[in-house]
Amino acid sequence: MTTLELPDSSRQWIVDQVRSGREPFDVMDAMVVEGWQRDQAQLAVQEVIHGLMVEHARANGLPEPTPVPEPMDRGGPHQLDGGDRRVAVLANLRHPRVVVMGGLLSDAECDGLIELARQRLQRSETFLLDEGVSQVHEARTSEGMFFTRGENALCQRIETRLAKLCAWPVEFGEGLQILRYGPGAEYKPHFDYFDPDKSGTAGILSNGGQRVASIVMYLNNPEAGGETTFPDAGFNVAPIKGNAVFFSYDRPHPMTGTRHGGAPVLAGEKWVATKWLRLGEFR
Ligand SMILES: O=C(O)CCC(=O)C(=O)O
Ligand SMILES: [Fe+2]
Image 1: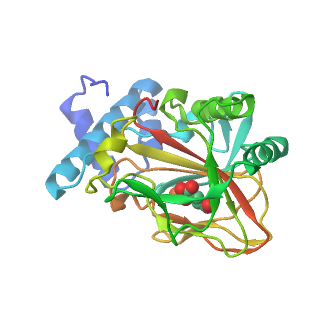
Image 2: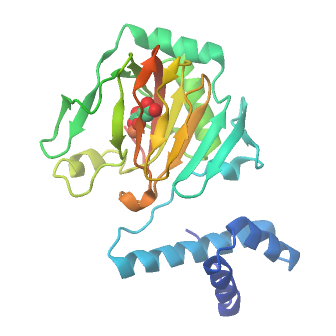
């Protein structure tokens, strides 16, 4: 993070605004009215908020926050710039940090991913970080497969779009994962980051570092069920073909509120593509 020569009085004013619950964008607007350049106001607010978060983490024995992808910096309040496609903002939650996106993928792209994945599906496994192995687990009753990053033209196009939308380098992303849930299948609530206390985690982190964001893209319309749930927030996202849910987590800790699951499919089937973004380059 760049460090600004911020006068103590300005810093204190921003701290007071943020502590009083004012939204960061409103604070920036007020600074612009006072004559600040918008990009300088943004840097100042970001820096002050980051400082407050580090202070809070140190005081409470929590992991310190890392940078995370932020789609809402990429357009206006309703439309995001995906480069080759405009993507709608359908809902936008600050905590947990969730953005529900409309029309991220075209119908043809959804169908294309399903067709490419169908022959390669296997019962999904869960990585058991204590044992350092991946195993079939009752918490996860879907079937799935992984593409490698940039494996084909369709993956490349979608990965380029996601990188643009999230302002996060393509090289920091894992390959797309495709999941199919049949009737009754589900993915019980979990966190997508790797638990720092588990013995298998260090090995995983040596390539790419922590996961910091997930994008779950819906590839079809299940007849009933199959929502993505955020039980700690009481927030559910309907699986609608072409839409997606983005969420970020600035540290591997439940305080991010990003525990989520795939609710049981009640009728029909559910297909999703999941993209995980890492803190660094993933090879
Ligand atoms: O299927 C869903 O709605 C969620 C998928 C998920 O949590 C994951 O792929 O990590
Ligand atoms: Fe997940």
